[in-house]
Image (cartoon, rainbow, N blue to C red):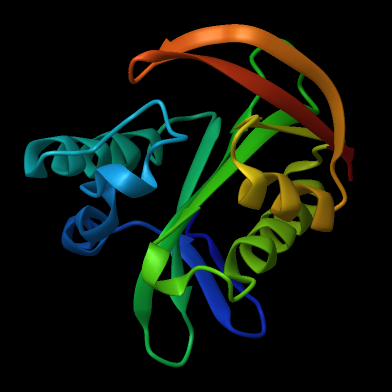
Length: 175
């Protein structure tokens, strides 16, 4: 199944092997990954991410959908988003996103998230979607609220990340 989702300004599509270079442009930036439990990536890390995603795309049944976020007019990869089915509840899953900081504050994360929610609801019969974010990540909280998510709980001292204990907000939205 090749996934191709178009919005007004974006295309969400499956990754291809050569995308690693554009991904690495932001995945190696320590300062933008302060809220992520991964990175900064070496070239090897980014290539392994792509190889893993390409392998997951072949799974049957498919439970993970990692997609490149591409500016439609420029055909330029500016980030990624993904949806993963919950292992315990068939009609539930979680999503996430990342945008290259050169393209922040343009509404691309919300536009991609809205499109991914529609896809999950219409094509995958998902009823409930969760998302998590670091309590310090105000921009991500704003994106989730804009996309109709409600904060349902706080996980204190969720895990250690980059030298600090991360507190995590859990958000949920019905489709």
